[in-house]
Image (cartoon, rainbow, N blue to C red; front, side, top):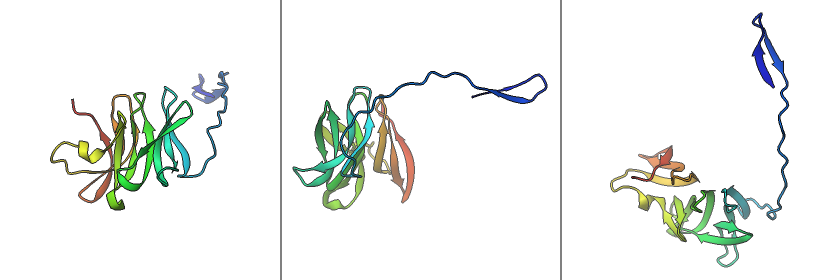
Length: 159
Protein backbone atom coordinates (compact mmCIF):
# COMPACT_ATOMS: atom_id res chain seq x y z
CA UNK A 1 0.00 0.00 0.00
CA UNK A 2 1.29 3.46 -0.91
CA UNK A 3 0.27 6.49 1.18
CA UNK A 4 0.27 9.91 -0.54
CA UNK A 5 -1.11 13.39 0.08
CA UNK A 6 -3.54 14.84 -2.48
CA UNK A 7 -3.81 18.49 -3.58
CA UNK A 8 -6.10 19.36 -0.65
CA UNK A 9 -3.68 17.83 1.88
CA UNK A 10 -5.75 14.70 2.45
CA UNK A 11 -4.06 11.34 2.89
CA UNK A 12 -4.84 8.87 0.15
CA UNK A 13 -3.76 5.32 -0.38
CA UNK A 14 -3.28 3.21 -3.44
CA UNK A 15 -2.45 -0.43 -3.82
CA UNK A 16 0.76 -1.13 -5.71
CA UNK A 17 1.15 -4.42 -7.48
CA UNK A 18 4.13 -6.08 -5.83
CA UNK A 19 5.64 -9.16 -7.35
CA UNK A 20 5.41 -11.96 -4.80
CA UNK A 21 8.29 -14.36 -4.37
CA UNK A 22 7.40 -18.02 -4.41
CA UNK A 23 9.12 -20.19 -1.80
CA UNK A 24 9.87 -23.89 -1.77
CA UNK A 25 9.86 -25.64 1.61
CA UNK A 26 12.82 -27.91 2.41
CA UNK A 27 12.27 -30.43 5.22
CA UNK A 28 15.30 -30.31 7.53
CA UNK A 29 14.05 -32.86 10.06
CA UNK A 30 11.88 -32.92 13.13
CA UNK A 31 11.81 -29.97 15.52
CA UNK A 32 12.56 -30.70 19.17
CA UNK A 33 13.40 -27.53 21.07
CA UNK A 34 17.11 -27.59 22.06
CA UNK A 35 17.40 -31.23 20.97
CA UNK A 36 17.14 -30.61 17.22
CA UNK A 37 16.89 -26.98 16.22
CA UNK A 38 18.35 -24.84 13.43
CA UNK A 39 19.26 -21.30 14.44
CA UNK A 40 20.96 -19.72 11.41
CA UNK A 41 21.88 -20.18 7.76
CA UNK A 42 24.46 -18.45 5.56
CA UNK A 43 24.65 -17.70 1.82
CA UNK A 44 26.66 -20.91 1.21
CA UNK A 45 23.84 -23.15 2.47
CA UNK A 46 25.57 -23.99 5.74
CA UNK A 47 23.33 -24.03 8.81
CA UNK A 48 24.06 -23.88 12.53
CA UNK A 49 22.02 -25.01 15.47
CA UNK A 50 21.75 -27.36 18.41
CA UNK A 51 21.01 -31.08 18.63
CA UNK A 52 21.61 -34.18 20.70
CA UNK A 53 25.09 -35.54 20.01
CA UNK A 54 24.56 -39.29 20.27
CA UNK A 55 28.32 -39.82 20.65
CA UNK A 56 28.63 -37.73 23.83
CA UNK A 57 25.01 -37.80 25.03
CA UNK A 58 25.12 -33.99 25.35
CA UNK A 59 23.07 -31.30 23.66
CA UNK A 60 25.65 -29.53 21.47
CA UNK A 61 26.07 -26.89 18.82
CA UNK A 62 26.54 -28.13 15.27
CA UNK A 63 27.21 -27.01 11.70
CA UNK A 64 25.34 -28.70 8.88
CA UNK A 65 26.47 -28.71 5.27
CA UNK A 66 24.95 -30.78 2.47
CA UNK A 67 22.90 -32.74 5.02
CA UNK A 68 25.91 -33.72 7.14
CA UNK A 69 26.16 -32.42 10.71
CA UNK A 70 29.42 -31.72 12.49
CA UNK A 71 29.11 -31.37 16.29
CA UNK A 72 31.16 -28.46 17.64
CA UNK A 73 31.56 -29.72 21.20
CA UNK A 74 31.47 -27.48 24.26
CA UNK A 75 33.78 -25.26 26.27
CA UNK A 76 34.19 -28.13 28.74
CA UNK A 77 30.64 -28.21 30.07
CA UNK A 78 27.56 -30.27 29.33
CA UNK A 79 25.75 -28.02 26.80
CA UNK A 80 26.37 -25.67 23.87
CA UNK A 81 24.19 -23.91 21.30
CA UNK A 82 25.08 -22.29 17.97
CA UNK A 83 23.17 -19.12 17.16
CA UNK A 84 24.83 -17.52 14.13
CA UNK A 85 27.00 -18.35 11.11
CA UNK A 86 28.67 -16.12 8.53
CA UNK A 87 29.68 -16.85 4.94
CA UNK A 88 33.16 -17.99 6.03
CA UNK A 89 31.53 -20.75 8.10
CA UNK A 90 32.46 -19.08 11.40
CA UNK A 91 29.88 -19.94 14.07
CA UNK A 92 28.99 -18.14 17.30
CA UNK A 93 26.88 -19.18 20.26
CA UNK A 94 27.20 -20.08 23.90
CA UNK A 95 28.42 -22.99 26.00
CA UNK A 96 28.67 -24.12 29.56
CA UNK A 97 32.29 -24.12 30.74
CA UNK A 98 34.19 -26.77 32.70
CA UNK A 99 32.10 -28.14 35.57
CA UNK A 100 29.07 -26.19 34.22
CA UNK A 101 30.33 -23.24 36.30
CA UNK A 102 29.68 -20.47 33.75
CA UNK A 103 28.05 -19.85 30.39
CA UNK A 104 30.37 -18.16 27.87
CA UNK A 105 30.07 -16.98 24.30
CA UNK A 106 32.09 -18.92 21.76
CA UNK A 107 33.52 -18.56 18.27
CA UNK A 108 34.03 -21.65 16.10
CA UNK A 109 36.68 -21.00 13.47
CA UNK A 110 38.95 -23.34 11.48
CA UNK A 111 37.62 -26.46 13.25
CA UNK A 112 38.28 -25.08 16.73
CA UNK A 113 35.97 -23.76 19.45
CA UNK A 114 37.24 -20.60 21.20
CA UNK A 115 35.91 -19.06 24.41
CA UNK A 116 35.31 -15.45 23.36
CA UNK A 117 36.70 -14.31 26.71
CA UNK A 118 40.09 -15.73 25.73
CA UNK A 119 40.07 -13.50 22.62
CA UNK A 120 39.59 -10.19 24.46
CA UNK A 121 42.35 -7.63 24.80
CA UNK A 122 44.41 -7.94 27.97
CA UNK A 123 42.77 -6.04 30.82
CA UNK A 124 39.27 -6.07 29.36
CA UNK A 125 36.75 -5.94 32.18
CA UNK A 126 34.07 -7.94 30.39
CA UNK A 127 32.69 -11.45 30.67
CA UNK A 128 31.18 -12.48 27.34
CA UNK A 129 28.16 -14.61 28.18
CA UNK A 130 26.54 -15.32 24.82
CA UNK A 131 26.99 -14.59 21.11
CA UNK A 132 23.98 -14.32 18.81
CA UNK A 133 25.23 -13.28 15.38
CA UNK A 134 28.40 -12.86 13.34
CA UNK A 135 28.70 -10.92 10.10
CA UNK A 136 31.10 -11.38 7.22
CA UNK A 137 33.53 -8.83 8.74
CA UNK A 138 33.79 -11.02 11.86
CA UNK A 139 31.84 -8.61 14.07
CA UNK A 140 29.95 -10.47 16.79
CA UNK A 141 26.72 -9.39 18.48
CA UNK A 142 26.12 -10.76 21.96
CA UNK A 143 25.67 -10.23 25.66
CA UNK A 144 28.50 -9.24 27.94
CA UNK A 145 28.65 -8.53 31.64
CA UNK A 146 30.65 -5.69 33.11
CA UNK A 147 30.66 -4.95 36.84
CA UNK A 148 27.73 -7.34 37.29
CA UNK A 149 25.53 -5.62 34.69
CA UNK A 150 24.50 -7.45 31.52
CA UNK A 151 24.84 -5.37 28.35
CA UNK A 152 24.26 -5.90 24.63
CA UNK A 153 27.69 -5.74 23.03
CA UNK A 154 29.28 -5.65 19.60
CA UNK A 155 32.70 -7.27 19.44
CA UNK A 156 34.86 -6.00 16.59
CA UNK A 157 38.10 -7.61 15.45
CA UNK A 158 40.97 -5.27 16.27
CA UNK A 159 42.75 -4.08 13.15
